Image (cartoon, rainbow, N blue to C red):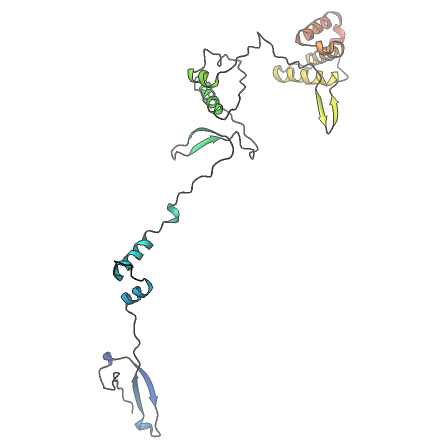
Length: 273
């Protein structure tokens, strides 16, 4: 038969809820007298949380173990959230101009004109009349002065004359005005250009100069084939005969002579074109 008994640590029988126990089978030769006895299991000491905290967190002078345990918890709670850490933007090694901020998040927008790693550092300012294009350029010029950068403005609308500039721009930039009609630039497009190819210098021929200038006129004014032929011939003849003295005035004189004396040749296709 099977008897279920429990004993405490002193061997005294008691209720099942009053002790720790485990099953131990004892079989005699007589099955009817077999007894299934529940032997008490040795109690294991359970660590007191307070004692464990005292062992792992030694007391600080003047503080109890409870206080030191609370301090440790507060330190853990006050650890910075990685998402809340603000990463400072590294200092840029190139010059740039602050143009403004985005809407609505307010992020700064720069013109990275000094960034050598960018393939394209150009900027386009467009807008209808009176929207502030000239004013924006003046602001950018004032910013570039801080980096000791020079500016060249080719103005054909008289918007950058001294009496048209903002007082701040005149003061900060101190622009030097050059009126081409009063003082022409020493640039002669009729001079043959030279290019260096690994030590080999190649100079343009009269035909190359004529093609370059006539093509420019055609791109701007969309002249016809006959006008292009006349212009090409006049430029090439002038470059060959006048050399460095060839200019726009001489070109007009040559075209006038061709129209008076060589009317048939004017409209003849140019074999060198």
